[in-house]
Length: 315
DNA sequence: AATAGCTACAACCGCGGAATG
DNA sequence: ACATTCCGCGGTTGTAGCTAT
Image 1: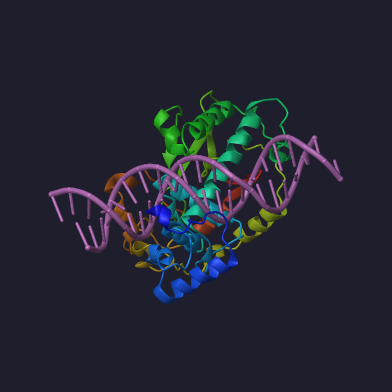
Image 2: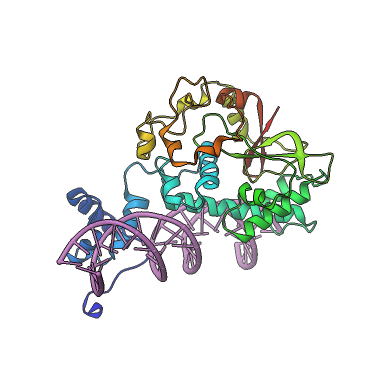
């Protein structure tokens, strides 16, 4: 039956094929993918057509544009919240597809693993430019513990999140502290330099890839310097425009789900909680500290970078 | 200049759930 | 109610381009 049909084409798409697919979508909309082959328009499966449209041909995609710091932050936060639900995470990132997010996260995990690997061994790096251009101070108490946990976490599963570490109860203090006006609650970790247990007071680290040592010898790249300059602007987040593809629960609020500061339920109490939170258990905020404003957060924080990774040290 | 290793990304595959007959 | 088809998602693989040696 399948043998009677013309051979199914695989591999890279030609411009002519793209054109045919685009015309089909123009006529019938992004659906009926299987009919494209049954009509003899393309020798591609419906799945292949859909994938091509969603990932490459759909309008308003940020093709060839690297993830910004803000996008990276969103992915990290949402991944820790939702897990590897790339399609869901992608709905919070206009112009990004689930494939983009998935690939970004995968690349990031590999980089992280390599950095930790290189920092855990004294053997010279094979060819990693990151490990050579950024010194990581392993002398800080607690670092080895932390690094090995992160590494274990990243090798045991695709996801490297602090929640995994949290479950191990290896640390004295692990608290849930929300970033200002973020939709989800990032997990921050404190380390103490005075004990063997990783617990450093006054060092709050919102990203799981962070190496917990405040005395890192780091030179800011031009990109980071530009970033720091932008954080001086209290209205930094206002530059982000409306989100086209926001999930309904967020679109219903103000069309700017993630990238713009909002008054939250933890603020002056005059605003209703975001509908988004309806999805979560009511006791999930019990141990959350009061929110600070985004501008306060960034003005009171210092941005650091290890390789391509950024993190914030709170003053 | 050649080569090896690394990275980012495009595309495929398998699976599960929804829709349809 | 059941079988089949379609669609969407997450995981995986292949590869082109870049960088370091």
